[in-house]
Amino acid sequence: MKTFWQTIWVALSMYSRLPVPRAEWNSKNMRYALCALPLVGVFSGALLWLWDWLCRALEPGEMLLGAGVVLLPILVTGGIHMDGFCDTCDALASHGDREKKLAIMKDSNAGAFAVLGCACYLLFYFALASQWKTGGTWAFLMGLAMVLERALAGLSLCLMPCARNSGLARIFADGAAKKNTGIFLVFVAILAFFGLVFVGKMVGGLMGLAAFLLWLWYDAWAKKELGGITGDLQGYFVQLCEMGQLAVLVFATLAL
Image (cartoon, rainbow, N blue to C red; front, side, top):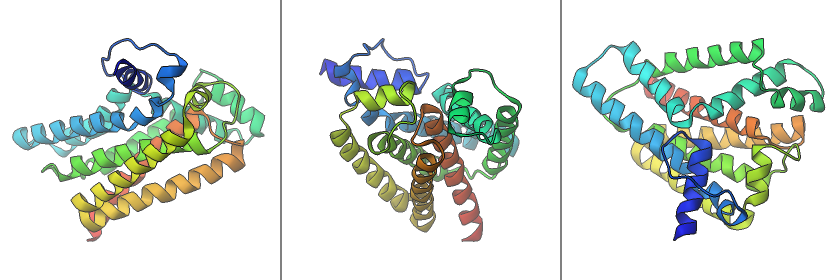
């Protein structure tokens, strides 16, 4: 039982800023840490639901409602995925070879294209979030979407090679019991997908389909572009998948 909780604390302490007990980073606790990654999506979805409930009660304007939808997931994660998104934007903008892109990702300094990419991302995300419909359903759907994208991100670490021999992705990939972890994450992804369909009907199904298509593209693109995945690329995928599913939710709702 101690190992079970330590495994969860390792994942949550790395991928979120949730206040959890101090965990021991050893091989025993790392084996199934990726299985707990979708829990970050659960907590993000729960906060979105609370924000949705609060906004139903207080009826603030669309801008304040949308700002909360944008900021709450970032507050939960501490911006770790957004950091990876920004580093990847810098690397891609260099148009360099594989080694140069990996070197840029490793650099802790933010370049101009990281700032530009972050600004464009947050602006579009805010525009989508300003269309938020209170009532609980959208919060539930986005919570499931965040679980799904993290299950897929963890699955990539089980299936894909790492682009370099160090870094966050390598630590979690090397420490994972990949077969059992992969099976568990597939199960979580399937549950999240059917949850989307159950709650959102066709709209939810389209959100799940968009996530799976983005994941297939991401794995193929990462392998071709960089020879595998990195922690920054994982963050890049999570942020793209999150915004992609929100975009589908907004536009599919408007269309249907």
